[in-house]
Image (cartoon, rainbow, N blue to C red; front, side):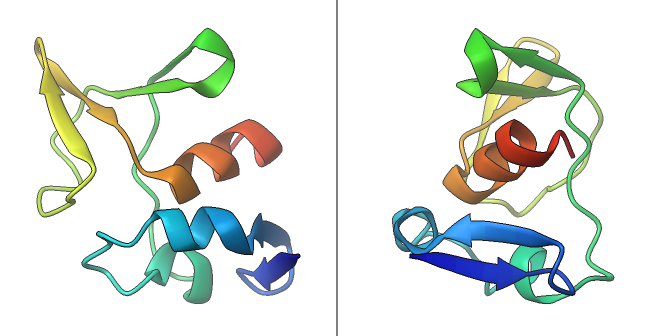
Amino acid sequence: MRVVTRTNKIEIDVRTVEQANLCKDCYRCIDDPDFHLCNIDYVAADGAVLFVFSDQCKECAYKVSFGSGTVCGCPVRKEIMVMYGI
């Protein structure tokens, strides 16, 4: 089952949303078309690892420090990047 999101342009698997149970933003990346997604600077391992080098998403529970940047571990953000290149 897929959830239609962001003004009906993106569909996210409901199981992926359930995996993102640590989200402190109440899934605004899905429900709010004006919400600014973290910019992904580099994608590795076919989307398994997302690098963010700017200082954004400060309060995100899925942000893990790595060198001079961070790695995004959010299941929803990963699916958006892999499926839509956003």
